[in-house]
Image (tube, rainbow, N blue to C red; front, side, top):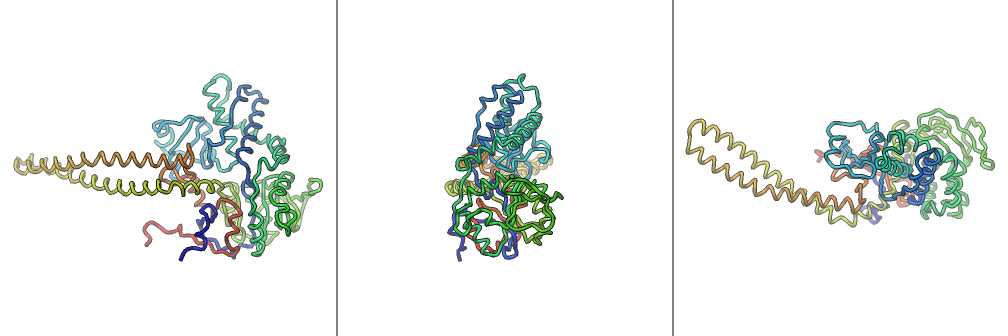
Length: 485
């Protein structure tokens, strides 16, 4: 019998790593940025790039940096940044670096191997590009790396020192409002409405779930942007806060999941804060706090809570690892990528076919090579013993096996090249530089391993929840081992 969800587009589906019984979930928390609130990424990242670049020049960096241009399609999530060398890396789940750039220049295979693959490296020493907010800053970093290489005397700092300044200027751009004030002034330019979001939240409420918002954004920004995407979207919920029992802003994730800071109540009419003790009052707004206190006050705990976010480390790894909250990761890129994967399905099928053909041929060649080596060994013995007749027979056998290897080897080489070209075609169809988000060639990417390891379920957008019952039992078959029947 076909699944009731088989009629959904692939990007509309929920994907399960760890079985999740929604009937046991009492509370569902949501991050805001890139989770409930979807951005016009090119507009937002371009703004962040430009405003941060202005901070560099104001701090005394060369005026020529103002000529740097934001390239919206250069980067993807899941990359590693080697801040000491000025390099970008795409790594598979076994820590093998498959693609590397210095600035915006592709490193050749020999340099890449010598630098990263000749011995094991520690991925934790590099910056992980886990969130969309990191894309504009990393894009600016690699552009400055290129500038430093072309103008070695104009910036007398190391790549790491430049990145340290970059982080400081990004934080300053958020603190002084130079980015978010522009976004709040024109949310339609920088944010995208999802017309199905309110329906998805309503279905969860109708299913008896308590919803809460847990975001690192401040109250003013949260209120402005949530009002834009949710207020008035449904007649029963005139204000966006009507969907949520609890609203927590400036939460300081990932520290929220491990820290001990108290909750402060936000006076929404003035933005002022006042100390808070005791229970959290529904429909009021709080700042800071910590997960342990939240669980104690609300009586929700551990695996009764599902947290929905887009940040592997800040949202998913910490909430699951420290608190045993269940996790739903929003992988926005899947929407575009799964549509493209459907289009290039014939390429993938041809890769699989040629891989099977290659494996069979390689096995045949290896068996022949083993026979050849065995004949060589017997021939040495015959020559040593002076058995000319046997030696002559063995020499003919040797020639036969060698000829067979010579005939088959070019076919194998062609298959290898065909597979390489098909993989390149598949990868560039998905992203012209980095290829598929979840794959590196035929291996799973480091990002894919993180998704599998920490996200109980994942999907491309929050509103996909509307297709599933709030009591749905999501079942995983990922624990099946290769030898299982």
